[in-house]
Image (cartoon, rainbow, N blue to C red; front, side, top):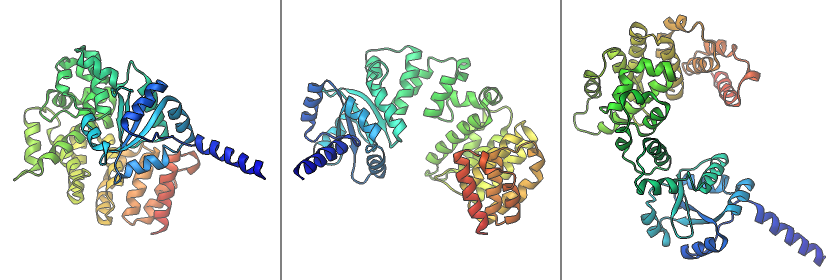
Amino acid sequence: MKFFIISFFVCFCLLSFSQGIRFFEGTIEQVKAEAASKNKFIFIDCYTTWCGPCKWLAKNVFTNENIGKFYNQHFINYALDMEKGEGKDFAKKYGIHAYPTLLFIDSKGNVQHRYVGACDTITFLAIGQQALDTVNNFGSLIRKYQQGNRQPDFLAKYALMCASVYYPYDINEYFSTQPDTALIREINLQIMERYQPNLFSREFNYVLKNFDLFVEKYGFNRIFSYLTNNTSKNLYALSTQKDFNAEKEIDKILSNNVSTYYDFWKSSFLMEFYGYYKIKRYAEYIQQAKRFIVQAKSSTPYIQSCLLFLLENVKTRVTDENLNKEILSFLTSYYAELASVENTEFLINIAFISARAKDKETASNWVKRLNRETLSETHKKEYDELIKLIQSL
């Protein structure tokens, strides 16, 4: 019996020891000393007690067995509340302003890597692997920058790294090294997407003026989304000002910068501003959406792409029955433009809009064109949600 109890205790301890990340308990100086003695970096979970994503990460990622094996092998792990005890000064020293911040330092306190926000196990594993890469991790890049490296290729890499870890960087420094003709490079588009240069910047206006060229290389949705998302974000920032008028602000943007598609862009920017997740003026959004489609057909070669873009966003944003009926009625005259489109996204989107318009028959007819067995896991979830919605009508 005694042997059984001891064996059970040993097995239980081994099992517990192997599950998830083991966090060191002690002071910051003690964890540094531990890291120095083991010749390891320190991973620090910078959290607060009120932070929902912090709690989710602790419950769903830190407890993962594979994560535990990797992090326990390569790091001394430490959790520190940024609003209590040593955490307050630590947050000031390392510029921790968002939570969770996943910080990696060496035993001397030098930053090696960082990441802001919750993430899944695959991403968290990749973050740890990148932290161990002393040539390409954040700490290595920032030290090279501080030592004076200003080569354009390095600055591009540094800019993307700063954006990914929410570290401030003046992107104008990098773009000053790039001629207009280089702005169409993939790396520069990525940087524009991450930093969203202001609406009067050379970079934004170059994409706007050369929309057709960018679409040809990168596709309609990516370029249209970059331009409209950037505009919506900037207009929202201005919207708190006295006498703000979205149309007038858009006219300022377009007046000296667009030789073609003026009315199309005006309706596009207004539509996406009203549909912006911090605005949600969906009645006005639907009105501008109709103007957007009219302009797309009359003045651009992108009517089909615009229709598909609109369907996806109406499905995502608009739940009001009458607004769904309004846009559905409007779109019936454009179905010919979509005759050649039978892809899954289109069928799911138009079926959702029909269902939310309480048109059970039309929604059911669209769904019949889908084969659940051939759908991806994501589309299967949408399909099942759609079926439940139709059955509830």
